[in-house]
Image 1 (cartoon, one colour):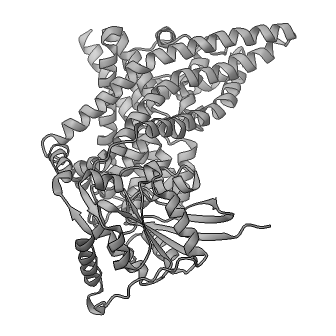
Image 2 (spheres, helix red, strand yellow; image 1 turned 90 degrees about the vertical axis):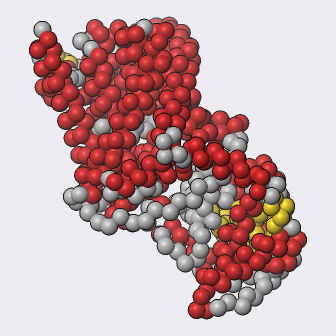
Length: 619
């Protein structure tokens, strides 16, 4: 017997918890965050309840059916199409009056409406009392109070959806007497009247957010606070990553010995052992032991700030700088998403209404380091700091070095944005309105699991998939000789003049080129190129990395130029495909490669030349 399927639309204002409701009902992992506009695509999922399958569509948030952005048009058109059997409108219980405007609009178009009164836990914390029965009477539709983060009320929501779809419950929305000449104000008038009748509110709960915002969004304190938070996260990441990194390195070292013993017992040829162990296995071991610990610490901390509600305040604080650069304030949100993944930041640019400003955000997103480049910066910053000030103070200095690199990446984003808006992307700057959501207590357990599984492990898995074949390819290039020089040597020698001018060398540039599929594999490729036997050294921690670098002529200037080029070079393969898909243009995709690469090469060459001049002048 085939299960009957019903189509359910999940609508609501931005930042009301729609994606959380969607995830809880479907068991999927649509990314959620405490800032408006997180959902920029129409997500689809399903669940089975009482023998029937319900297809749920999580629509992008919209304040009104009079849509002003492409994502809001998606929500409006889907609701108005008549396809959904039920439209569930997710409402923020702490901002009922504003949310009711959309509810009233939808109830005038369809009778099959259910109101999901979400965030009831926050309403209680703010000493708000809502008369749910009175709200049902005023609207004429079922109202289900929920707290989606804890799944409270979701069983009742599923039951209400089932009853409406099967006709056991028939909503009868109230017909409103609307002034057609002043339609929008009529909806707001009705929303205000209903909210006044059903909400008893004590303002004491809002005092905390107001007091904290005076500090977080202060003209004088906001930027120092932002830098302090970021420096703290980086310090915790750098100091905390050392121990698990050494532990993982030791475990992989032991495992390599076991695998080598197994190959010897099986009588495997030396070339097979070299390709699989010295090429593929050590490449994987380097990626996991060096890259996983920083990601496993940094991203949970970053996600805690996101869930707390800090990212919209970050956008508010940076809006003035982006305006001076001719960019939209929401570009700072897409930039923040880029710190997690540049491809995700580019998709998030859909929250910007203006096509010109959206393209600007896409072209400049790669100027901030993503999760694949963060571990490279942290590793190199730690090595550079330890060599200068020693291990005891190395963590603090390394955090400061990486912080300066990140600030420089933001300044570069603003500089390139100004250059583009003054040349190929001239146009009028659109207005910027952003809702500052309330501060919310992060669900620490959920955040830790979600950020580790969805961000750290997913990125690591992508790197592992790429690291194995790239490690094998690099081993082959390093073990096939032509005129007594390996193919890897020929390629690096060809790149040597440019690398030398940049204060690097040909091996480093070759590592970046071969690392196009994923930035996480750049460092392993570089080390394989440095070692004469064409295989990675055994994974023995950061001290061993430093020894190899120094033996190959690295100085503090080499490490600094490496960090600069790590930030400013071409996007990875996934990001390039995303840019091509979002812009639909090969021209803009090529420009997204040229801009950061030319900027990075220029900075490295100029810095190297200045240091050479100063060194000669002082000698």
